[in-house]
Image 1 (cartoon, one colour):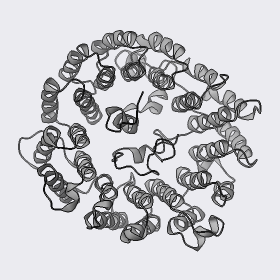
Image 2: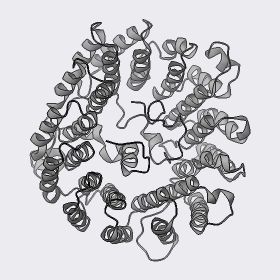
Image 3: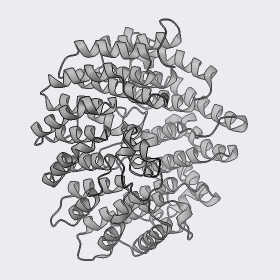
Image 4: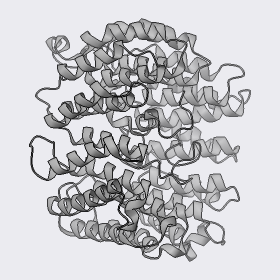
Length: 592
């Protein structure tokens, strides 16, 4: 089970896993296609009965039920769950509008519900005048914002969650004038950093870093340039050592904004490389280079700003060589690990060769998990970029298999297991993973990740093994969640009823309910909707069971391929944490 050591590889994986799992899309892959494709495409072969998406009738029934609950002044957990669930279902499925339902909670005295209501306005994705005016007013703490919160000053946590909400809307809209309306209050926060608190400044940086998926041209290019300039001015400002943790959020945010802008990319690649090199050398200038969080973020950003490493000379080679040197020599352990993952994100044959060399010499307990994960990520990136050759790299798979056979530490076993899953060679890795699963089935940290690794391989021959572990692990929430993800990837249609039973279990703890709800939500199986609705209506059910049934309903009905907070989760420097980003419970990276 993950502990509070944020330097462990598990935190990197848990925050950044969604783009690699693509769980919702994998589960909902269409079964239609030529019969012979099933013999050559592992993903199709693993999906004989693809899970159906919720129908319009399903959505209408769920929305009606959740709006009724939200309007009945429920307890805090149910109210918070309803707001987020309705937001996930989306504005198009709520003809009555979401702001009307959220207004009483924005103006209420309960801080958790106030900030959840603000965030829900961003999750639901409707950038209409009323929503934008409300969120902008909350961030600015102006007259309209105070009116929304009951004619009182808007506190910093609420302002921060409103800023995160604006970032979510920013990703969805294409009109430059609306982007300007969103960005202006966020830029203003960074322009006067001494007037604002830590959470709001980090929220503004992270929100400005969420780039729209469309082409950055014309007026949108101008809007993006203004936001990058605001991030740049804040990052380069000499505000003292106490500000460096906050400024550290700028490099990944800037990197997220730059795809399709090669000249601007080159400038920032050179600047972040210089700052990271200064940190490695222990230089005193610029002052920010002496901060470990800034070094970590520069390493993360370089992983997003370089082309694959294929040549011995050039800008990419210089960045990749620096990252490799940081992994070997940097005094900050987390910078070393992030540098390694950035090298994997860069990709290319030279990156593979460097990572294979590091695997051979890595310290078994401390270094192997990170090097193995880097090789798994390298292979996943290669497969994503080369649609004509999606198969794994056999040399990488062989190297991982060799060290996997020598590993006994559960932490190492779990990491290399995930890496083998990402490497994609089921014939090689499947039998080894099943043997280790049997050996470590009573160790949560290893068993859960070994099961998920088999899911990543779409190894349907392992369904019975994983299903058996899920049945036996009903009181082990971490294992329940990982096994459920694995069975979803394998398209095992028996997992949803098992999880529904866990939601109804007498005396179930908070963590068990949370795991079952999260797992059901990731599966998106419409067959569980009637039972979940029944649980929400049953007054005899414990309040927490009903709240987590609502959470699950929202996730099951969510049409988005990735969780709403995945955009904030990767790439970001979660080590430079403030409470509204992640505190283990109520930050945006923690909310289901």
